[in-house]
Image 1: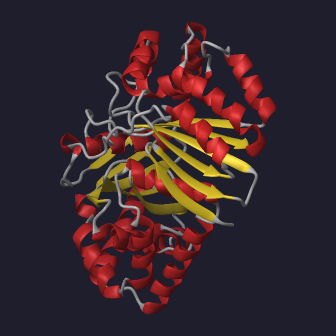
Image 2: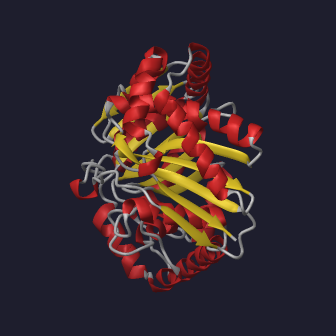
Image 3: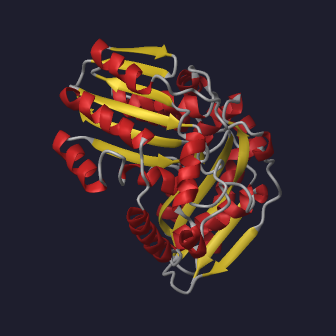
Amino acid sequence: MTASTISLSNITLLRSDAVPAVRLDIVVPAGLGEQDRLLQALFTNRLLREGTIHFSAPALAERLDWLGAWVELTVSVHHSFITLYTLRRHAPEAFRLVYDMLCCPTFPEERLEAVRAANRSQYLVNRYRGDVVARRLLGTAIYGPDHPCGRFAEEEDFDSISRDDLLRFHQHHYANFHIFLAGDVDDALLCLTEELFGEGKSAPNPSRRENETLLLTKGQVLSHSLPTAVQASIRMGGLMMDVGSDDYYTMRIVTAILGGYFGSRLMRNVREKQGLTYSINADLFTNTRQVLFVVNSEAAADKGSSVVDEIVRECDCLCNREVDDAELTLVRNYMLGEIYRNYESVFSLIDAHIHTHTLDLPTAHLNRTIDAIRTATPSDLLSVARRWLHPDLFTTVIVAP
């Protein structure tokens, strides 16, 4: 595969002749944090494919299917995404369809009702699921109910969202976007992309809002009774460093050792030795610039506290004793292998560019990650764990029958 990266005004291009396919991503700098009422960003994005001034929803779906094209619509804290996968020979027509979705949606009332009903039904199911309830409780406890990561829709929000809300959000935000183009892109397709989307303005990313910069606060333990649950759902977590700091790259290794792969310490202890759970993992999330650390697991209804005790014990161990060279070598090889596997195609490489763009990170972000994995010492890991891995400051949620 040969690949090259080019940036043109509001277009980032990653060319590759490996496959006769193309991926187009439109990144709008407006998401959950920019909406003025719950569900506004999500429903605006979701209804883009439910009808335009030129195509009804069935006609649009039928044409995309005929072209063998696939459209994904997603929303994050501060961005909305339209992603198209298409064969190279059908790319010009598929691009024009996506342009129609982006610029000329009609948000038909009947399609809004269908989307509203489907999403409300999913909400009604999820509110009886222990894992979903635990995730929501943890988000609200950590971020607060006024933050987009801690504010969640309730049933009345599905009823109150209106077509006017979607029109307003679209008019205010969807004229500004950045284009990411990857795959078998020739000059003619690039010219068409500039012709269709070149008028879009690249607005500054909203991910560095000062009023959303939160500090890690003293943790708490929240126990929630959910009669419909069949087991205990455990979530423990807290906010850490800025995603661009040196500590973040080293903390990724610490987190992997703790619970980031099948042979991690939590899996060996809580699953294999203690027999308390089938699965347990730790991860770092970059929904915003400030990194969120989370450990999550499911256990028997009466074993939630026991799992929490073991998580604390493993965190304390990483804060008090250096990782031996053999374990570090194993984790280093695992993490490098995962990175090389995850970024082996041009489409996954464009994901890395989108990630750095939305978080306003330098282009060397991925290289810094690889360098940290290769060079971090046991002493480095111990220092970072002592700075950040404090279970007594994390919030713990246990949802059980």
